Amino acid sequence: GDSVTQMEGPVTLSEEAFLTINCTYTATGYPSLFWYVQYPGEGLQLLLKATKADDKGSNKGFEATYRKETTSFHLEKGSVQVSDSAVYFCAPGGSARQLTFGSGTQLTVLP
Amino acid sequence: NAGVMQNPRHLVRRRGQEARLRCSPMKGHSHVYWYRQLPEEGLKFMVYLQKENIIDESGMPKERFSAEFPKEGPSILRIQQVVRGDSAAYFCASSPQKKGVGQPQHFGDGTRLSIL
Picture 1 (cartoon, rainbow over the protein chains, first blue to last red):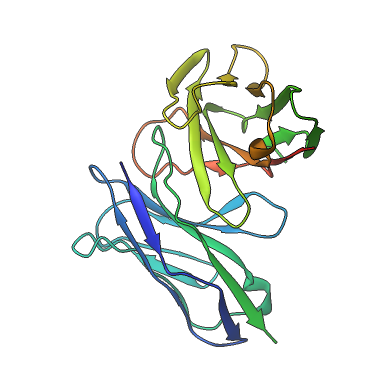
Picture 2: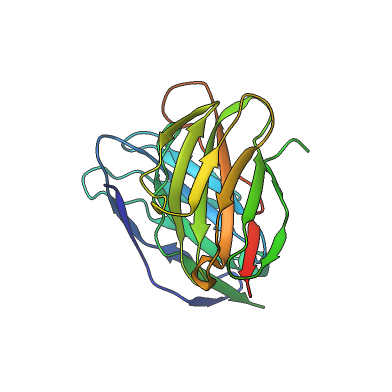
């Protein structure tokens, strides 16, 4: 089955710092890749996605590129804000296919 | 807002009781997925359903747990004779019928189940 290895947290950054959260995966076939974000007490919200090799997903200043050769989908943001504090999950999967989540990376951004 | 609706948001049960968790998918979505999240952990897949059919239940415990998605009404996750280890957040997600890659799953806010 699919599996995900995600950078362990917690990660603490100052506002406006550069963010990288590493994610590597193993999966059967050619899955779509997703980053979800979870705020306290809430469900997961889709942050961005990529559906094939070399695709770059982007949203709200976050980016991630589908790297088939390294089976990676690292999340980056050039300048984080306090409001970005949340737990971030990387997941291969897609419609009609279960999502496989890593353990998540807790991000805290300090003012 | 026509997002995925789960209820109740919080559910407290005593050991041995039954828990019923409900999920109404987004409008136009016919695929429903249930996941369980233990404290400080990621989500673990439980079951994937389409209307009136269980497609994949490989993540569902073999005993006490069942799920359905009837032709009319919400999807139900049912846990019989609950035990303390069932305490967790249960999330439902839905996706559309449309085939093809890239269709994300949309999540509800979850049901927090506490077993006394």
